[in-house]
Image (tube, rainbow, N blue to C red; front, side, top):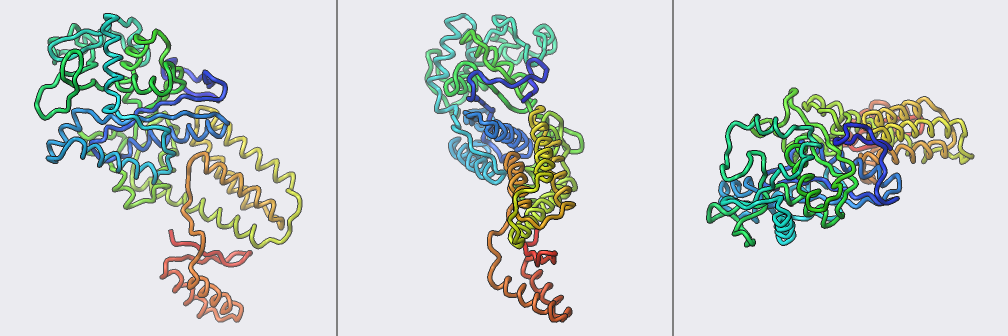
Length: 462
C-alpha cells in the first residue's frame, strides 16, 4: 500500500513503526457552529483510510480531538448570550449525530483541550526551559528561529514569511512569525486557567501536539487533516513537538482536498457553507458520503445539488443490484459448487478494487471496480445460487470498506405483501387491469414493485 506523504511530496510505501499497529491522529472540529460539507470530506476520507487499514489487518489506534477553547467559541457564546460550555456541548452533540449518519466509525478517543490544560502547561514549561519559547506581556510564544527546519512541511521559507507580513499585530513578539503557546486573559468573560506565567488559555497549535503524543506516543504513524491545516497549524505542530522530544513527530502527513462551490473554496466569508443537517433534509447521508469519495481525496471536489442527484441514482442502482442478487439466491434451487470461471473473474475485479485502494486510496477507481462487478453480474446467467452468493459477498465487502450503507427494509409490511399476492393472482388470471390498479395502490403506499424472471421484487420507494 502506498500513500502520498505531504512532507516528502512523494508516494511512499506505508510501513508503520510496529508491525500491525497504526497510530493515527486527525484534527477535529472547533465546536462553535454546525458541521459542514468541508468537515465531512475530511472525516469521511480518514474513515475510509482507517477502514482499509483495518481490512489489511492493522490495529488502528485512532484519536480525533475537539478544540473546545477558541476565540470563535467565545464570540459565539457572546452572540447567543449563553455559556461557553453550552455552545461547545451543543455542537459536539451535533457533530456526533452527523458522524453517525455518515457511517463514520467513532474514534477510539476524543480528547478535549479543556481537559488537558496541565499537560499543555507542562509542555510549555519545557519549551521555556530549553529557551525555545519566551514570555511577553501578551503571552508565551514559540521562537521559530530556534527551529531551523521550520517550513519543511509547507515548503515555505522563513525569510519569505517574514517579508510577506506587512503589519505586526503584536509588537511584543520577537518576530512576526512567532506563534502563541499561551495567551494571557484580556477580558473578564474569557475562560482562563492559572499558569506559572499568569492567567490565560492555550494557543491553538500546542493542543494537538500535546494530546496526540499523550495518547499515541512521541512519533505518530499518520497525522491527517484538510489541506488548509498544512500551514500554519501542522507546520507549528512539527516545530513544537520535535523541539520537545528531539524526535520525528509524524512519519506520514496526509491531507485531503477542499470542497468547492462553483470552483470556489467553501468559506464562511463567501457565505457558501453547506451545513450537513440542511443537506440531510434533501439527500440521504449515504448519497453525500458516496459523493465525497467519488473523487480522489487529494483533488478538490465541486459541489452542486445536480451532482448529488447523480449519486442518489447510483445509490439506488446499488440497492437494486443487492435486491436482485438476494432474489436470485432466494429463488434458485440449485446448490452446485462455485463456477470456477466466475470465481476467477470476480476475484480479478476485486483485485482491481484492492489495487485502487493500495494506490494512495484511490476511491474513484475503487468505485469503478464496483460498477464493473455490477455490469458483469447482470450479463452473467446461472442457475446456481452459490454463484450469486459469491458475487453478493464480494459486493458487500467492497461497500463495507468504503463505508457505504444501503438503507433497505428488512421486512415488507404484511398489508403490502397481501397486495403483492393479490396482484400476482390477477396477473396469472390475465386480469391486467386489476393488476395495474394494485401496482398503483402499492406505489401510493410508498413501495415499488418490479417484475423479474425470479418473481416480483418489492422495495421501499427511494
